Length: 206
Image 1 (cartoon, rainbow, N blue to C red):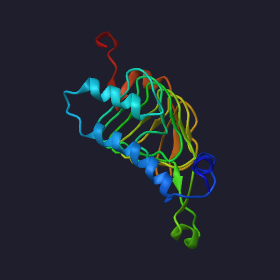
Image 2: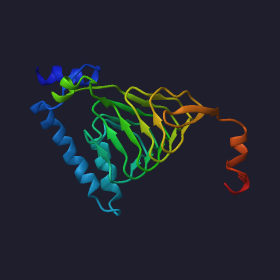
Image 3: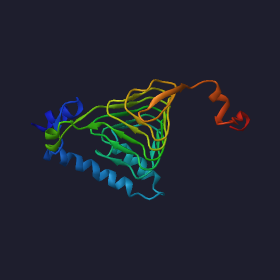
């Protein structure tokens, strides 16, 4: 299979051999940039910003990823809107596209996994896999250790609780958590009054 045809398979959900030599060589180029990013000093903010613009498929204004970032393709298929913040150890299996909206927060150790492998052991042993894109809307917060599985969409303004495994789409404007992740409730007026348990928001101070 030609490289161009193989790359099309990568992004349209078909099974393909992920150990193709040309594909691995292209991937290695992207990982070099990720290595550079992960070995920058905390004082090198300008260099980090420049590297993110080069690494990611799209990188809006005001985006930042705390090193280390772990991405199969070094963020090559990762699309960030504006003002996206990712805390330590963001892991992105970006074998196909991951679309992230504006004002999204990733807590430490979040995993976004677009890749899957056949259940059939013969195909899996032969290095076949498939990829399904992930879509995360605007103003979403993913808590620590959240895992988002292939093909999932998370709607605008939703919050995913720490440790959740998101196997199915989550609608907009909800709190969801669990394994598998399920909607617990809608975001409501109570959330405009309280920010944590019985702690009220003092709008005169913010």
